[in-house]
Every structure is written in structure tokens, then in C-alpha cells.
Image 1: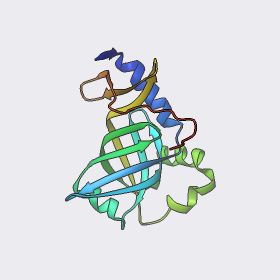
Image 2: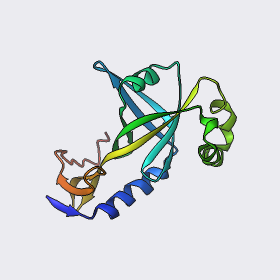
Image 3: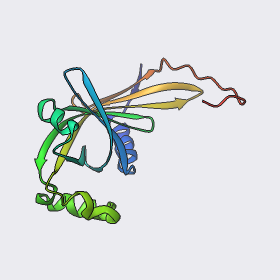
Length: 162
């Protein structure tokens, strides 16, 4: 196992996440998993997003606060908290309007929309170093970061694209 600095790896992952406008949200309840693309805003170690209160994902969130997100080569585990209507949080509205000015009034103002804050507990992402594939993990609960070899097999064939 390769030791990493928690702060350095956490900051790298959070900066990378903050650059992404859209990520995949996974919720689950009673062995049923739902996956949905969402627009997101990252602030410190939390992911903020808006979800419709009539959706199945919202129903699952009410009963199971453990969620996951994925984007590019990163996977996030988090604990979600339902915060009420998005317009009740002026800081979120300012950030959302700045980032998604083209669609600000379309979803945030709807009476069915709910703001969710998900506190990141763990991040995993793939890194390629010295021709090897590694999985870097940042554990926000234990405040540690570590690197392990990936079980992925790296195959390069210039005539075959996956």
C-alpha cells in the first residue's frame, strides 16, 4: 500500500469535482438502485443538488440517506440531507445562478423541487502511474488517504477501441 497525504489528495479530488457541472447520482432502497444525472455545486466537502420531490430518487433518499456519485474516473460516497426548497438557501441560489445562469429559473423555482446537501464520506479514483493503474482512496471520516493497486487490466491495442 502506497501512503498519500490526506489534504493533498482530498483537495485534488474536490477541485476536480468542482469543475464538473453534471455528475451521476445513485440512490437505493430495498435492493432497488436508481441512477440519475444531476447538475451539482460543490462547496467545501459537500455536493449540493436539486431533485423533484415526486421522483423515485427522492422517495429513496427519504428512507436511505446513503448515496453515491460518479463522474469520469471518480466515485463518491456521501450522506444526504434534505434541506427544503432551494430558494430558502440564498447562498445556494447565488452559486446555482452563477453556474447555471441559462437554466436558473427552470428547476429551482418549481414547488416540487427540493435542495439536497450530500456530505462526502469517501472518494475513490483511478490514477495511472508508471504504467500501472492504481485506486486512490480518500476517507473523510478517518481523515486518511491511501493508494492500492487496481484489479483492472490495462490492455492497449491500437486497432481495437473500447
